Length: 364
Image 1 (cartoon, rainbow, N blue to C red):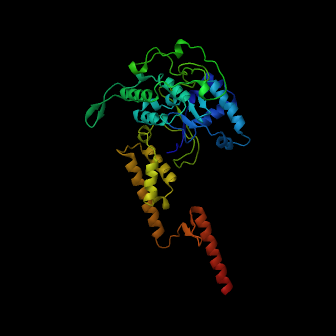
Image 2 (cartoon, rainbow, N blue to C red):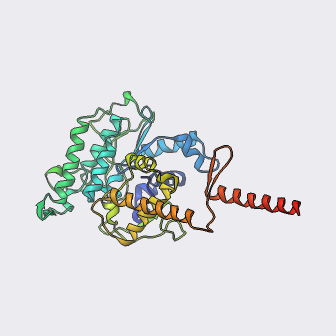
Image 3 (cartoon, rainbow, N blue to C red):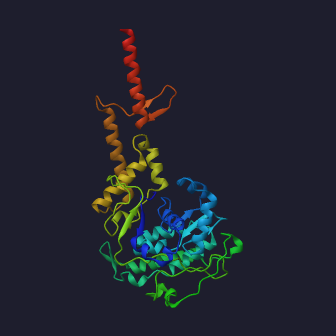
């Protein structure tokens, strides 16, 4: 499911590396982290032409230049050969690592990465996750003790390491053409202990290795570290019905977010196969579904089942409205066989009524 908002920590405006960027570079970074197709691993398709249409006067060449600057400053990693872009610190700064189910979704998203350079960068980022901040108490699973949150997240990281192996970030194999030397490491940028073994010492932010340097793996990106109680600003479409953008929400995520709910292709095929797409706008209904469960904070044992029930109920109400006597239909079948719905159907209906009144006037 496409994201309805992007999560921006307000302390980004206190981050020296971010403040060192110029206005265009800052704007582009905020643009990237608020993209609807950004997955939980921080992966995006590199689509310069499409992005260039998002602002007047923006060009693919200008975007490429700004992206190269963001890569030089270690905010992103690009690979032009595979047309992929990774926001290095997304997993840490979006709080993905704190939630086992969302972390699992991040690993699934990471497995889509084709570029060895991006794989190496993400593995280096995973090494900086402060597992020691997560609870090590057993979780309750059907009345029995299950693995702790720390162990679950560590298992996800281990799965990713096994899947990627030892990716070769050799720049000769692809990537951006902008050279940059790796920064010197400092004690605060260097973890003193493997996170898989316990709590890493030192900064959770740090820098990444040079995007073109021959090193075993690039180090992570500069971006503000997640505060213990961050203030969150939501950026993007407002699905709550409040009618505004950038509305503030309380700190923390609802269960539907922490559980990593997403509408899969299989769920969409189900809706199409059973005819619900003829009655319901699936994307709109999904946005309302997510908004409802974010506002109530309720949890469902099976989010896909809850979503299907929501779609069935919406379709039932839509069907009943169409069958209700005296209720104008919002679906019109044209002689050509084309079906009009929504606003088009209303306009066509008004035109039909106007034509009918005109004919009645002529006959009188």
